Image 1 (spheres, rainbow, N blue to C red):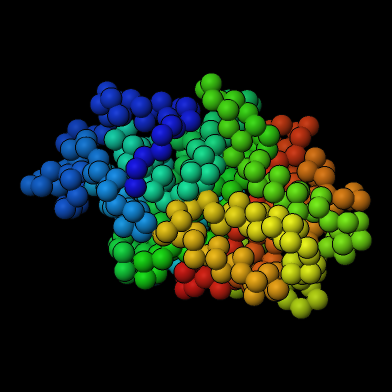
Image 2: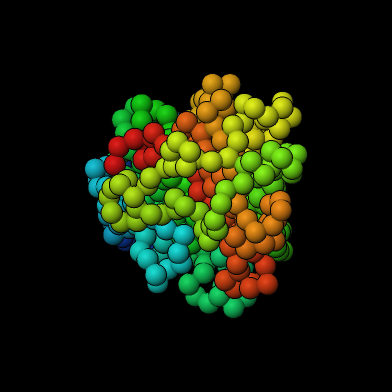
Length: 384
């Protein structure tokens, strides 16, 4: 997969640029790593060479596998041991959260612990895993934490705290899982028979509006919020009222409720009348197109051939839309992104998407978004 034509500048991107120039490698001198066939290690000693294997001739799942192997090949032995987990380690798979460091733990080494060469490899992996829009969100969410840290949030907010973990052995055919995490970020992508299943996936950002960090503007969750708001703005007042849920929603319902349990017992989707909302197939063509666009904001964040294409085709089919409901909640007559407690939901036969407007933690005079994207049938590939 070819690299992106431009990478937003951030503290992370500065490190990446230095690594590309070969002048910022901070890997431990003489550190050993596991033997690997990747070109990122010395064939005799198995130690990282400072080079990152080139995966640009690969596409789809093969590119993601190649990029993951390339990252592993840059790691010294201690980090390699920290990043790798057994595929059947359900407790570790569910060790992800929206909370900042200090309140929870995450799997794997942090970006701040990685060498500049490993950061280059990790960035290439993110590019292979994600679509252009998804990669922009990923970089923006990392930058948002740096922005929070620099604006009164302190050391618990930083892109340097983002982690990476690999479950099982990367393969184009066998099952394995990739996990990228930080405050406001959790990518859990399980590959089964060569197809990536990208849930549960949590993305959020504070501030929710565009912000500038290290000279570059970022707006990582603006598109998601705008897409959800557009769905309900297009409804007439009667339909919008029918779509409104009772009660208040302080956050998404099904965020990291399974944190460190190794179980999906607490992930309980509403059924029957409890689903609420209005059925998408009862809307007109333009309104349905807005729902499809909103679903795409989440499901389309991943590489198309490996992950998004098949998922989007199923989630937006006529059959799926006949069993997909849209709903919202809030204290105003119509959804208001600036009002704390405003909440949106897309509830399909498989796809479950939520967006909640929360009060600011660092910027207290504004709301910010929490979102969750789940698959009712195939979170974690369907098997924990």
